[in-house]
Length: 169
Length: 418
Image (cartoon, rainbow over all chains, first blue to last red; front, side, top):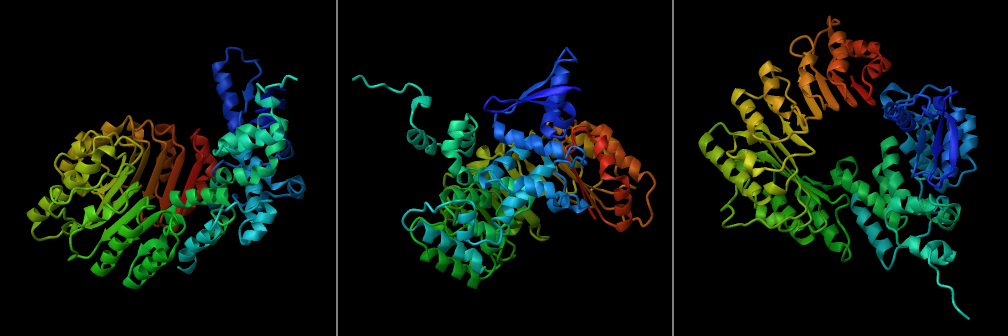
């Protein structure tokens, strides 16, 4: 089985089958670039992902492993063909996968899925974060994301006043 | 006892590292910090939802754009969320709060002026930093000018529409003096309303160091006094572009601009990323001007149903062979479209086809014509096809996305609008 070494920003190496890795658009391109530039067709590609740390890379690979037999969605799949809806592909496994995660980790996963071009994972993580923002009040969002207001002086009131024109029009 | 002096960041206590990391404004720097080692990740873990928001929001927007109300809520959470949200509002004012800042009548602009006057010092009355005036009422124009002169400092994007035939001339110097930070200026109107007044001698235009994009969209030419109108248009364009032409990288215009003497010299740096020409059916002379003007066009949008995609047309565009990456054209599949013509644009990444065919039966060869694109535009990344009737839509769907995708190795976006 052809393998590829994928190395995280903090130096952890993951040995992954090329078949699985190629389900990430980014890793697929990197593997193909390596093949074209390498004289030895048997050489094992090594890909360093400088923006993703080991814990997150492991989660992405775990998700890819679970979904290895799903059809690959194009990176910019538009919604008109009906396959862009995250809920369509969200299984019980996905829900269990995301359930224990802190929203900070989910945001890191969004950045990782976007960078590695893993459309299905990007869909479900975006959907989760969106659901914690859309239709929520300021206090509900602060609670969900464990955020505190750091506005100084009258900045918070000023922001509310600035919004008023758009709210009323 | 001799005190040890920390020589490496690793020697510093967690509290001190946290202080240092909090100075890093850029979310990419924050990502690098948490991606360096377990310890640094653990120290800053509680800040992730605050510090990564500005980087995650554009991705969320692409997946499922937030409604305006959600954006307004998001900018009230804390300073970092406000900054991230405001960046998105500025990048795409048309997607969110556009309507609230398009002035249409006296009542609206008076209320906006009152709102702006009621805000505390330093507040921004224009979310998205955008303001447009499309009213035909000179009274609204006067209030628009007052609004800009009193509160225009935050504005980055302004649109001025002069669609009323008897409108007084634009007092451009007076308006632009109120928007020192403007980056994008769009002027939309009838040629006879564009007037430099006394011109550069009487009304010198203020320096606008951030201005990089200008649009002059001409809605119509008068039938009378053609010479006088041409002369006035020439003076206006030259007044504006003598002041700002060199600093512009983006310019939007209608083909009327090709009639201005020395337009290539007035806009010497239009190299990237976009140059639009709209509403244009080019005649022979205009094609000659276009091909010799010396611009390096990356983007060309020709949205005219009547344009003839003649060999002459493509020969004229041959000068942009080394630069053109984005082309929008209207085609009639059964008449004027030959995919082979596009071979002169080897860099083409984005192609938008408006297919005007009115045929009610499946046109022979349509599929072949579209399939040919794969061979002539190997670098295509986006293909956007708008079809005019249901029969054609059925044919397009029948071809299947995957078949299309297989033809273009780099294609990651196929969109059919039916």
